[in-house]
Amino acid sequence: MWLRPFKAKILVDRRLLISAVVKETDLQYANNILLPVSRGRGYRNAFRMAHSLVREGRGKIYAIYVIEVELALSLDAEIEEETSRGEEALSYIEELAKEEKCSLEAEILQARQAGPAIVQEAANIPASLIALEVEHRSAMMEFRVGRTTDYILRRSRCPVLLWRGGPGADSSGARGARE
Image (cartoon, rainbow, N blue to C red; front, top):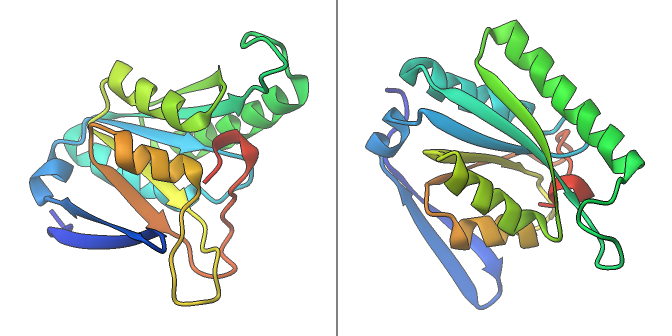
């Protein structure tokens, strides 16, 4: 396999440094990969990374779009604008999967917060890996993640693989699955 064990250090805030170790064996058996998507086209690289992993293991990619529902609304409230954004994002992923002849299942979820919904969905599948693409937010030499990515990194029971886009990359930290 082309990936080697590595250690990644991520600055979550000024006081906390998270170190994560991903072993090659964790990636070899990535049969079910959860791919949270959001508005925009910034998750193309995460999809390609996930596809290369499932192609070797004959697995499946589960793409989800999480609509964060405000407390004032019920969880099953119809939010047409966000639903259409989710359908657009998932149809784009379905097009990529069709081009690559990749097994994909796509779903829109509604939750109060995206992080817990993504971690719960990973447990329900059960996912062997969560693939996230995060945007490059700072011109400084710091790497910061948002509340959703932070929650997933802290609470996920399966490995989390991050793809960080460079400055000016087409990444989207949109409300659907906030980064």
